[in-house]
Amino acid sequence: MGTVKINREDVFDGQFSCNTSTLLDPEEFRRQGHIMVDFLADYFNDIEKYPVRSQVEPGYLKKLLADSAPNQPESIEKILQNVRKDIFPGLTHWQSPNFFAYFPCISSTAGILGEMLTAGLNVVGFNWIASPAATELECIVMDWLGKLINLPKTHLFSGGGGGVIQGTTCEAMLCTIVAARDQMLDKVGRENIDKLVVYASDQTHFSFQKAVKISGIKLENFRAIPTTKATEYALCPILLSKTIQEDKKTGLLPLFLCATVGTTSTTVVDPLKPLCEIAKEYGIWVHVDAAYAGNACICPEFQHFLNGVENANSFSLNAHKWLFSVLDCCCLWVKDPNSLTKALSTTPECLRNKATDSKQVVDYKDWQISLSRRFRALKLWLVLRSYGAVNLRNFIRSHVKMAKHFEELVAVDERFEIVAPRNFSMVCFRVSPLALQEKVIFVEEDQVNKFNAKVLESINSCGNIHMTHAVVGGVYMMRFAIGAPLTDYRHINMAWDVIRNHVNVLLKNLSSVASIG
Ligand code: PLP
Image (cartoon, rainbow, N blue to C red):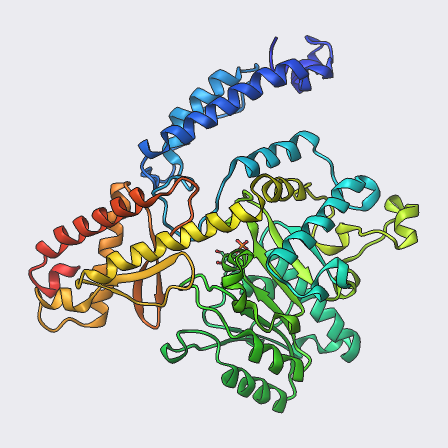
């Protein structure tokens, strides 16, 4: 039996009769499904064979694939052969145990199978009636997860707030800015939009700026408050307060603060308690972006990082980053769902129904940007049930322990230095200026940065491991982020050997400042 037997042209030509059952023949689905599961299981078995960071040149794939889509059906076996031969070389293998770049985006059996279930059922739960279970399960798992990370009851459905699963943090930020914007403009008049000001730190993720831009707030009213080493690059409440006061003096309207728990560069945590208190004084909406680190708060020992969150209006984390839920799964909680739905709801006649009119149900289309939505709650439900809180905490703790181990390896080699405190499972380090001074006298910070950039490129080009970098306070650092699902101590030790070997070679070749490059 073939796969997809119909194609538009052939139907119009009258060559095939239009038998739609072949689009989703259960037995053929079973056969191909098994092939696909075997394919992925083999991939996970062999994953260490591949260079972690793709080594291809731009445009490589165009040279390998046909110019236009095939006219005739092709078998799944042939297509998967092409995946292995043509697509794999162009992959950076995020699930490789030797992947230490960015933040993790972790696959798990439960997460992958949850995605499969979502795709198989393929319901579109934009409102309750369109698939009641999709909405109700999402409400339930958002309360489950909220309780696990110890969010205040006020942010849960059971306490008058509520949660929604969106695709990304950027979407969550945009939705909450728009809710805050409309709440404010309803009070002061829409003509005052140009007076609205938003606050963040210079360490806040750049997607916040994108969200601000889309929301129509003037970019010159975006305050990226500088951070310093003195506060370990956390947002300083005194500076925030000063900035707000200056804005108020010039007649501007402070609107929104984005605080971060676990910044992207160094995983620093902004002090939520004082920040939220200042914001409250001025009626500013606070959103807490805990994209990566919020997941660690399922472990009680990390929950102190959320002290003060009770005064935040909204909070989000990416469960696809460090809660094994497979891209995409951004969980957003709001204290006042009405402010969100007031800004985002639409009620076209074609979607009117008794349940919505009764106001007894959640219609998630009014909690997000788009109308259509995937049944993402299924995979989160599978993850939470398949592993249980006990195992989920153990996974997170094992990543943190491995990060501590790596930190100890770095600390005992005096050619390296840790450049930011480690809060979670990421270590920021560099080759120290002292190591260079043994070879080259009078090394400037810029040269130390250049040398470290050279080290990182050399490591990433070899394909054995993959790390990325950050520049904070003028210091170029390598970020070693642990969390891939198959990573073990063996990989951490091997990574450290790789790093030291590259540094040894580059230091050996260093004869003058000019040789740094
Ligand atoms: N916020 C933080 C702290 C992040 O680390 C990231 C990505 O790594 C983001 C936001 C952006 O997330 P998204 O891609 O889901 O918009």
